Image (cartoon, rainbow, N blue to C red; front, side):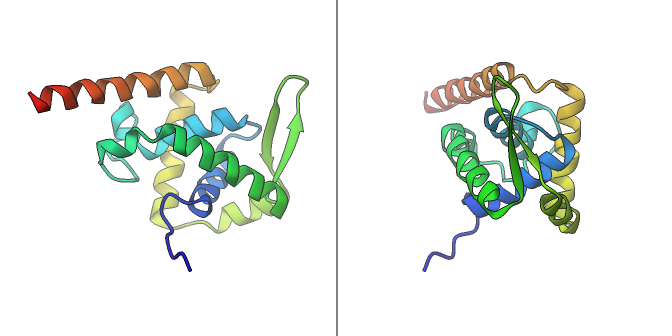
Length: 153
């Protein structure tokens, strides 16, 4: 039996619900980018703390996070917490009434801090353009790679 909680579909599902409570109707790519930036907000000068810790190696895990988000979305749709909506171009995901109700029950410190990080991200990048956010994440990963190379010298 696997008792792991962190970096799982379960944990990611909770964050997806919290994120969509703040900004509904997002693509899976927008969700993945916003979630990644919210959990590593200090690296993106969004807040003064990284909710998932300060390990620079974690920041390199965006492709893993993207897959976790896609799995979480599938699970949340099947369980009735999210509904997919096709806008003619993309599938967008929004909370169902069940998802909204559940989001209101998430009141622990981590959830409140995550919501605050998401609110700041939405103020700073209101359109959540996936290409812009992906570029920013990739740039931050390159910066950390250069720092690691300098540290090795």
